[in-house]
Image (cartoon, rainbow, N blue to C red):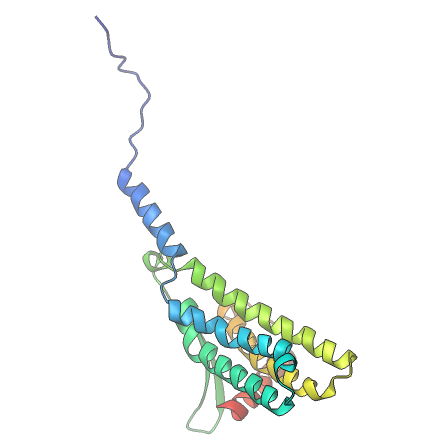
Length: 203
C-alpha cells in the first residue's frame, strides 16, 4: 500500500495573477493609438526624406523649401497638440493672464497605479525615439550645410532645428521639470524666449 507523504513541499500559484500579468504585458506592447503614432513619425520623417532627395526629383529650390517647411509646420502642430497628449500624456502650452503676462505650462497626466500598468510602452518608445532622433539629424544637417557652403539650405535646416527642438525642449520639461531643475535660471529664461518666438511665428 502506498503512503502519501504529508510533508510534500508544494506551493499554490494563482493562475489569475499570471493571466493578469500576461494581459498587462500585452497591453503595454500594443499600440492603442495607431493613427497618432503614424502621424507622429510621418511628417517629421517625410521632411527629412524630402530634404535628402528633393534635388534628385526637382530643380526648384522654392518648391523643395516650401514642401519641407509645410511638413515641419504640420509636424510641430501635430506633436505639440495631439500626439504628446495621446501617446505619453504630456502637454505644454502658453497662456496670457489678465495682467498680460505670458505663462508657460508644462503638464504631465497623473495616472493611478492601475492605469500605469496599461500604459503602452510601444507608443512611448515611438514617441521619444521620434522626438529625439529627428532633431539630432537636423543638427547634423545644419553642420553639413554650413561646412559644405550650401547657404541657401541653411535657413531650411535651421527651421527644422528650431521647430523640432522646441517640441523636444517642451516635452522634456513636461517629463522631468517637476522633479528637478533641468538647467540654471539663465538657460530656463533662454528656453522660454525660444518657445515664445516659435509660437509667435507658427501659431
